[in-house]
Amino acid sequence: MKKLVSLALAAGFAMLGASSAQAISEAEINDDITEFQGFFLKRFPGLAPGDFVDGVNALPQYAHRRANWELLMEFPPYEPEMEKAAEEWDTPFANGKGFKDCDLAPANIYPVYDAASDDLRTLVGDLNACLKANAEKPIKNVKRGKMARLIAHYKAQFNGEPMAVDFSEAGAQAWYEKGRQFYWAKRGQLNFSCADCHVHNSGNAVRGDILSPGLGHGVGFPVYRTKWSLSGKPWGTMHRRYGGCNKQVRASPFKAQGVEYKALEYYEAVMNTGIPLKVPSQRQ
Image 1 (cartoon, rainbow, N blue to C red):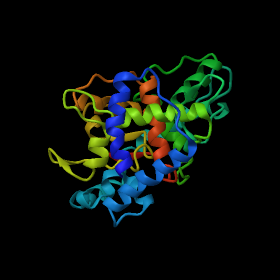
Image 2: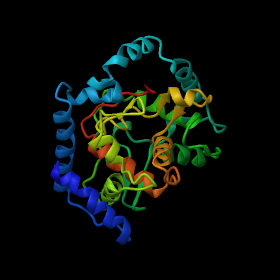
Image 3: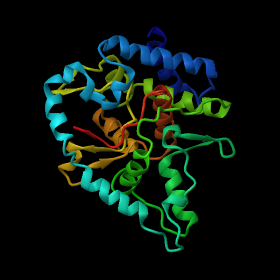
Image 4: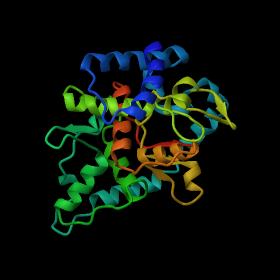
């Protein structure tokens, strides 16, 4: 874990002085995956890699609440919403086509690096691109609501498939490095990084809540969150949660589907290589 801990310092300097991230080799990324996952398997010795799909619910520190969560999962609160998502998915476009005709990658390989544009394709972006290509209005709110439901419906068809994001191209490796810097760099008035909460303090309690481990992040998104349901907006994509995390450390959130969060999503997806999808999921 020494290599990953050193990234906190390196990321801080990079965020201050570098205008762009330098590419990292494919071999180094594979080493990062091994070290990252190995840290959590050592920190939580009773868990297997596949257990982390349940997020904080899988941790021994959360055992006192797990029974309640298991009871909730007997009749998941998101089931009616998933039925609505299926209807939305099957509703044809004005031209007779539908989401089933969209050119989408398998859910377990997103984000996908596109060499032609030197950009990352996210499932959110591909769904909106499909709508636009079929003369339909793109979905404006890419953090919750209909977009989150559509993603949950699509990803659920790939449940059990291990994350397998491709990082073999140099351009993809540069995106990975951007995301890695973001994950380990401190920000906000609290001077926290993603890693401070979800690596170093994973499993520890903060104001009565248990901090979730970085291993397993993303494989259950979109999530149906109890906290969000209180305001009538229970669904959230990865980028909605990223924005919330930034606010919690008193930092200004970045734009959903912007460069920063796409890079972060890519980094987390790579770190979860081999961890299966389990969508939708419920979180507190």
